[in-house]
Length: 207
Ligand code: GAR
Image (cartoon, rainbow, N blue to C red; front, side, top):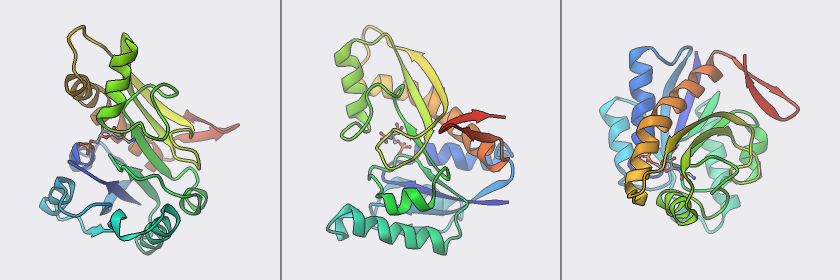
């Protein structure tokens, strides 16, 4: 059974999808053993507590830079004996000290079709604002491994939705979450826990 550590910064609807998937048996060979938040008082922590999942808060604001923050996260991941780290709406970029030690063991959900609308500065609603401003006709979400560059690790799964004429960033975000993120993130987590993701030439393939 693999230890899954989920990192959050906000409302935690993706965390909820993972909790629901674990409860229903859709995540095979893995269990969420800790939720770590970069912010105190976010609703994601409440979701974890309601489901008796241990929580930790490592506030980003308490650290002067990304390296010292990442060292604190790394220490927590080691203490928790993490087999898999899931960034579920985690709004802080982790330094190489974490991404190299946990290479191909950190999964992120990004709310766009990478390589579009991704990288530093593209997070949350900003991603959907950019997609609408560009006028794309489809968007979606990407589940990928995390490496030292923002949103640049190997892609595991992607899914699409149509962009509607009268979409706002909020309506597009909701459609992508409901139709793609909440389904594909638990799926990718289960594939990982079942050892069904193969890496070849830096790319991820489902076995
Ligand atoms: C989700 O849409 C997730 O894809 C996005 O933030 C939202 C978090 O919602 N993540 C990023 O933008 C990371 N770059 P949640 O807290 O309800 O899961």
